[in-house]
Image (cartoon, rainbow, N blue to C red; front, side, top):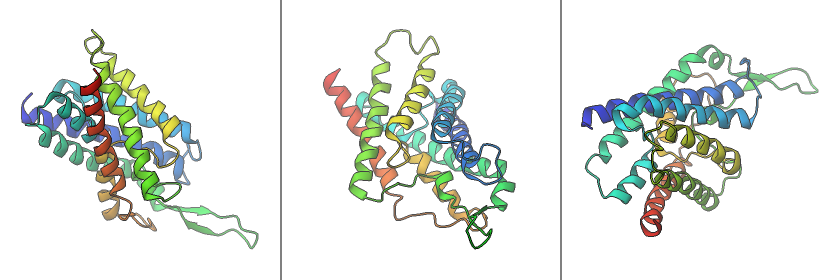
Amino acid sequence: MSNGNIFVGEVIGTAILILFGAGVCAAVTLRYSKARAAGWTVIAFGWGFGVLAGAYTAAPLSGGQLNPAVTLGIAVDTGLWGKVWVYLLGQLVGAMLGAVLAYLVYCAQFRANVRDTGTTEGTTDEPVPTIGIFSTVPEIRNPVANLMTEIIATTALVLPILAFGLTDGLGESGTLVLIVSLLVVGIGLSLGGPTGYAINPARDLGPRIVHTFLPIPHKGSSDWGYAWIPVAGPLIGGVLAGLVYNAAF
């Protein structure tokens, strides 16, 4: 694969992933959305479908990695590092583009970024925090626990992806991406509760950058003090998965 194909494929595929993922978070979070308060299961499946659409779209151009943790895990396994930077750059640019597209889809809802508090003193409106639509926010802010969660969850993603390659015909049959998408849904349902399961540095960092600059009324903080955890944790998890795979398989 040429550097140009890899870059374009990863930009397009990651943009689709984030469009679906940030889109479902916006749908469930924002007040004037028809899917408001639909719940965590809807979010988990929305992200899974984003992986499905993005990876299938990017596969002919770049293989559809869409995740720096996956890219690092593959590089650790294969020893091929020459094109890693192209993948990472495409993934970050694509994540930023996808976040902008999700904002444009819900721009009217973002402009009406308030909710009815329904207090006993009367009905008042307060801003709806928006960083959780674009990036992850922990339920309990504990750096050690949050980092451990992201490392374990990402290892649980990348190690099976590497192992799936041992199944003859899985890639050729076209079902590999479907299985990975279901794996992402499963991780969201089982391991996503503590931190929101970034499991992808580009997925968290790119939209966080975009959130910082988007003209969202009352958007709140972009929470840069937490931002290193959903970057470092998945990167460590990806490398760890590659090392375990090399040692065990």
